Image (cartoon, rainbow, N blue to C red; front, side, top):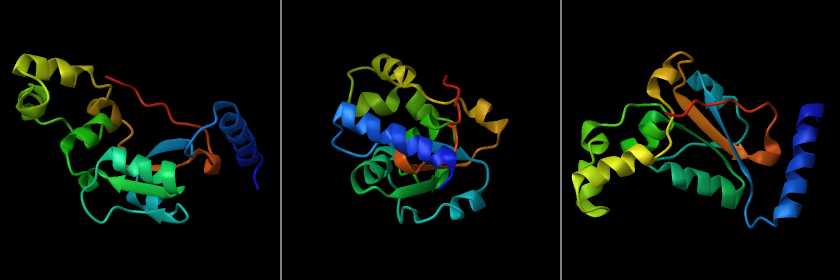
Length: 149
């Protein structure tokens, strides 16, 4: 076991003890190349369109390592939050949210603007296209900072 991984495991176990968590802590990492997903041991990929929340819950509840491309997400909201794609105009102008969640398009736009998300332009400089989530106890590297819009 590497010294770095041992350090993380000790911190995670302490966090679990102090916080009395009901599920596993989760770490997320953005990757540059699809091949990097294949290098992660026991990585699971979605078979059909899923939401980011579903993937995170698989990690939290089942202690799985999961990974996805922008195309693996069922809705554009998930991939836009991660900065993998631009949010479509029907979402960013409030139309999508005004159909069910809010009364007006203006409220829908405010709702969308309030969602923290990585800027697609900032992702292009690193050309990240994939992401993976793993149980925090298995992390073996330092976290990557993701700029938010």
